[in-house]
Length: 270
Image (cartoon, rainbow, N blue to C red; front, side, top):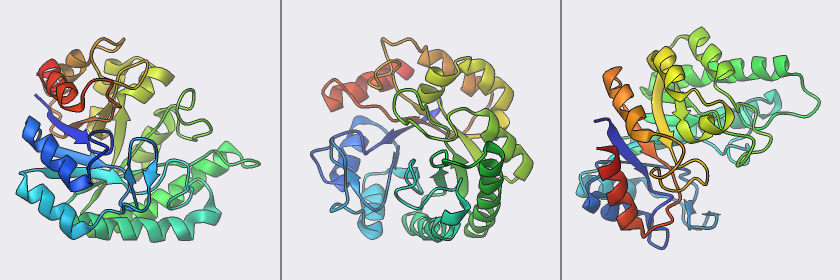
């Protein structure tokens, strides 16, 4: 079975982040991921008074036998790190990328999530794509030097992220194939792309060579994976058959008790 990673932002939100790692490890998971080093999700919003400390984060992971698989290098809307689709934000964007690469190496993490940011008013699609290509080429060069893999994440614009530019996989996949670096892959979020496109397994089969990470949540509702319209065991089985060696990430907001939810999800995907 694919390695399963847990987005620790979404679980045990009443606990400090290091304690969340301990709880997740105790349930039987070996991999975690998170959103922003600059803050921690408290169940309602990202609390920037709870910034993550690299040393304590690395220690908590090591003490609990956990590997940190990935984290977000910026905010989806550009509020952290700027919008890559806007060339006026590029200086800020590159500064953020380098800062996050340094943080990743400090905690022993080898993968980072990058995003397109918002569609820019009064800017053509072609111009935004050119800006993204320019931004990603330089970001990949920085990532290659740091020995980190970047994964581009498309998000849905219908339910959760109105105005987000990469709300489908087509343009992101084109850019990844054009740049053609082992340090640039696609983050395929099943939840987001079921809302926007469907044809999940078909897309995965045709693009597994450029997929570097997966995210998941129940559709509709973004809660547990079971009892929703997506057949997640079939997806996990297929990516195993295709030889995928990375993590399959759980990024959902549980309706059940968090411990029971994670235990049931692990069993469901096994």
